[in-house]
Image (cartoon, rainbow, N blue to C red; front, side):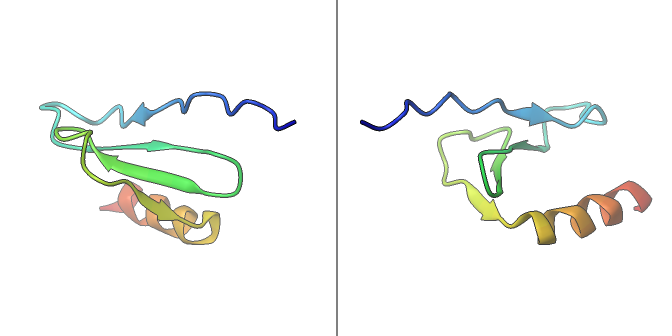
Length: 61
């Protein structure tokens, strides 16, 4: 028997002012990213090792 997968908890940046941003969720083993304006489009899967440098870069830009 497999365990049920909990729903993803999507987070939007606190810097979003017009909704033109991305959202991310943290399922086990990775990060999913999607477009806030078009949530039906495909999500992009990113490894934690790539996500951390991206977030650090975004904070300084």
